[in-house]
Image (cartoon, rainbow, N blue to C red; front, side, top):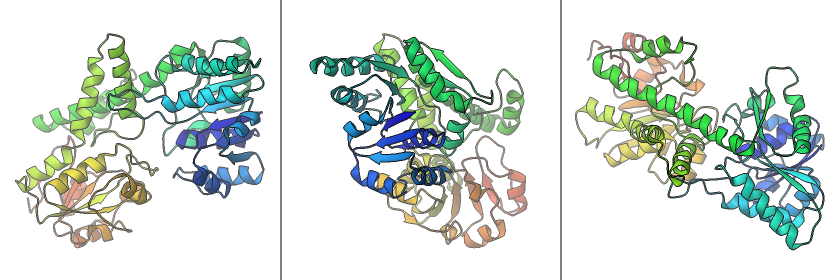
Length: 447
């Protein structure tokens, strides 16, 4: 099948590369000529495990192509995926201007029947607007081509996006015409042939809303557990035990019940706000989601509060803190809405100095945030001379550190664990003052 993908961000690159890996002929288009030039040479603009290998092999097999010419991309595709960004605007709305702009341009170039697939995360009603933009331009040209517009939201987890695409648990497709349904079913058949995943067809508004509802539900679980963690700290309960207890209920399940320093990334914060805004525009109020967002904003500051409590001062001048982890989650260099940025800014405002390490996200963090940080290339070098270490992102690199070396490099053996990575008793046995989220402290001999 001939496929074009418009936009080469996380979703576009993964979508295009994985579809090419199934034997399709794929053309990826982006207006950023520098990015396209790099991709032609196998240079990825993002870090995503497994993507580089797939990209290289499909370029070599001549199934994956890159262009900055939209007309060329349109001519190359019987399926045209829209994967351009929809960032939040100042009011919490998803900014779909790029999606609509591309849709209008598609109408200038489409010559034959094709299926335009909206894969970007967009508010309900956007696919209809996309169809309208295309039809306006087709009519202005007196073109006879027909187009089906389909909603096909992505459910890719950064850090596991390739495996999610290749082995989906479900593929949501909002469609109106029977022909488009048959073609989309054929397109995705190789990805669900084992029977472990399924293609779910529904109407277009339902498909658009499903993406927002899914992310909002997951974000709600995270904020709920962070509030439960606060109750645990106030009562002496242990959030790990509470999490295990409720997670064993099959109506609840075990996933997304981990407390921490809040969620970030390009999806949860944006989608929660956008869904609440959609409700507001309809004259409704999503009180739960408004609270979810509020809790998350506060949770990103929790480690700074714990640090100030530990040192019994709002003034942290003269203190140096080592930060382990800058990306919003492990296995990605994405730092959008990263809790690390809020934590570091809070510590700098209190007069502290920062030394930071991340396996892949340092350059991305440096580009996104203008913060006075001493970046280090090694997780242990990052600790040298610091008063304490803060675990912010749960990279595998940090799961089993050499605690003796950590204690030797720090001025004081203090760990602030924003992801509950370590066992309190284990840290205490090694002489650390260990402070985590929602778990009772263990006083060591020095405490």
